[in-house]
Length: 304
View (cartoon, rainbow, N blue to C red):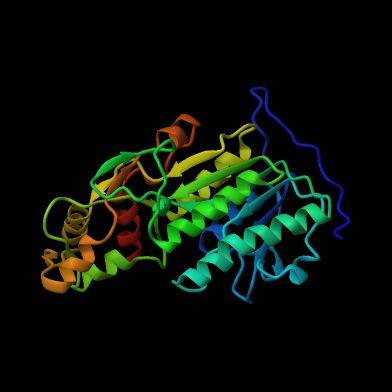
């Protein structure tokens, strides 16, 4: 067991948690987790990053090599944790991988924390807007019904319920499509002339830049009493074809084309909803990239 002495939380005159001195575990420390860890380290927090394999961790994050779904590998977690952030991703795109990463992983980690009498102040779970099945352009918020038909949404919702039934105060953040450095699929498709969009009525998409994922989690960790659920999306749900056209204009690429035939059928099967971020904004979070324009402009500038 880690023998560190737990530091008492510091708060400012308005009751907000002050920066630094917290002991934080990021379980599944990958694309978003590393960016979050860097922010926490800048606050002088002590950060552990748990990964299944030998992937890179940001400098200063303390490595724990373990498998969240295997109890035996979770025996040496650090003690006296103030916060736990569950930010794992599946190792594949089928139901078995999602069940292992989210359902089994959450169960085993909660068991490991309880077995060592850990009392973190809050357990944060990174989820997805895929738990919403709405597909007609409806507006969606934290109170909207969740009835996912696809296995990814079902497994995430199952994991959310495990977190909510667990012994710790919790906050779930349902992120939209995450893009950012090294995650530039749409930008690459537009630049190379391969971008297509579905025919028919507009299909709304919801996204958030990687840096705002990390920024929102960092912000919520600092709040003394965050709510139990937030939608993590930027401030402009946007029609997909409009986003593609904007990118094409910004990089001087051909106008994206209308999909046809079987290609069009596969595109129509995707979700179509508009997610609100009002609750996250009301908590005091200020987006670094409020819309896709600022986010993609930053990515495009990095290519030059």
